[in-house]
Amino acid sequence: MGASYSAVGWNRQKKIYDWIIFSFCVVYLATFIVLTAIFNPDYTFETVLIRSTSTLAVLILHVILSIGPLTRLNKKFFPLLYNRRHLGVTMFCIILVHGAFGILQFHSLGNVNPFVSLFTSNTHYDSIADFPFQALGFFALIIFFLMAITSHDFWLHNLSPKIWKTLHMFVYLAYFLVVMHVMLGVIQYETNPVFIIIMIIGAITLISLHLVAGLKEARKDKINYNLKEEGFVFVCGVTEIEESRAKIFCIDKERIAVYKHEDKLYAIHNVCKHQGGPLGEGKIIDGCITCPWHGYQYLPQNGQSPPPFKEMVNTYDVKVKDNKVWLNPMPYAEGTERPGANIR
Image 1 (cartoon, helix red, strand yellow):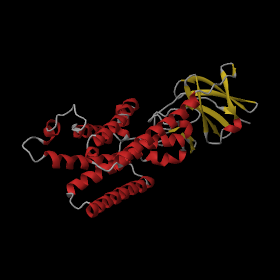
Image 2: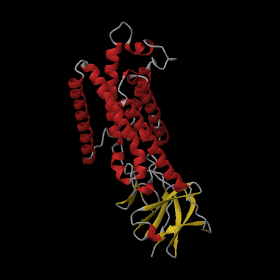
Image 3: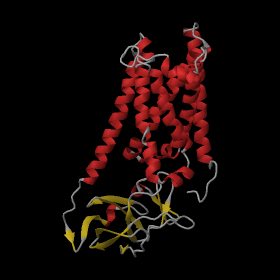
Image 4: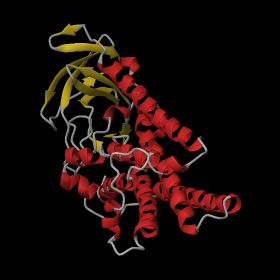
């Protein structure tokens, strides 16, 4: 959590991940350039740079889009989620190099402004074989630019989480533009089908991961809790919830996380105010429920972030009867103090 704006807050873990990302990019680009020099010595350096940065950016984009569903399927991928923003900014920088050299090589040698040339040198929009694919890449670059410059909590707070999240969901439109940019561009001139196969495998992998993760979430939401008593719903046994951990229940469209902490159970809304992270998939650290996505914290008894932070979530009544957990899905106002249910 950050109380105020600072340019970048790197801790030791983030520095390690950034060095891994940087090293991978350098090794990838160097390998690509050396192999091209050996097997295709006729290519110019500019062409090799355009191709190496494009393939690297597409690879990183697939990794970025895989992280979300992977964390829904396995908590071991959460460390990747913590560093997804850095990966996204890295990808934008690589795409910027790709785009800059592309414009310089193909649109800067004439009398027309390079950006005007980008949209007017080829107007065969009705042709698949000769489609002006560079325009698609340009619009994808604009989306990635907007995402990169707003990849900081300063913009998250100023734009509001809803607008910020909506803006960053445009990454899927950018991905579609990138796929079409590749398929209508360089793929048209390739005789080796390996690039088409790689792109198809990448798209199928992403779609499959999102479908599997979505189905897993849908199954949770469809569980029926039929046993009711005075507004409370039986949800599970006490022993099914680990100490300092939670179970998530969806009742009457309310996603609620029930946490066990120091012989008591507490219930709060499952959605973090920061970026909508699943609070019930986190754990209690230093007495606070800690979001697994970016470490935002809430006190279990009232759903309030500890001072000086001001985020708050709804709280709920929970009770224990004969070692069974009963939950009332009627929410209290955000930040309302609730006593919790004694286990013993």
